[in-house]
Image 1 (cartoon, one colour):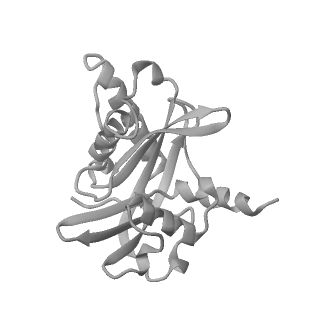
Image 2: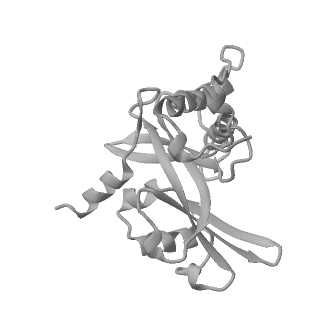
Length: 215
């Protein structure tokens, strides 16, 4: 099946995918009342996505779960549903989501493109690229990914973004300089609910990043 790239995802499709993500989580608590019904051919195209759950705390977003599918090997709607369920109930950093939290979490969908090796940090566009790093130790693969929202939220430079991705993988800072390590950039687009279960918009991360440098 043909892959769907980030630039091909319409706002309508993104809204439907976020809706499916929320239904999937709700269905965990009420399986007899909710059905997951993907609509349209675009839903069947293969895609890579991450689903992030957050809570609003005093005007700040607090992470509640984030899991995804890095490679496009299943229909994007299935990747979204599975990522949503894993984010809600299987992220080892957090306890499983409780029913009463459903009305508190905001869902963010990040659609990822193909991995491209980074030849120079200057190629990295903050707000457009996720970063993924990997290094093979014998049969053990050390890897880590940071989504494009992360450097924007923290006002990181390209170098800090790359270094933090290394550390996410359990590697040393500036790990991309070591032999056997490959740093990848991944084009992406981000869609987020404005409120729990509310309107879904595309987030202009580049515009938000510009605010880091304004007095």
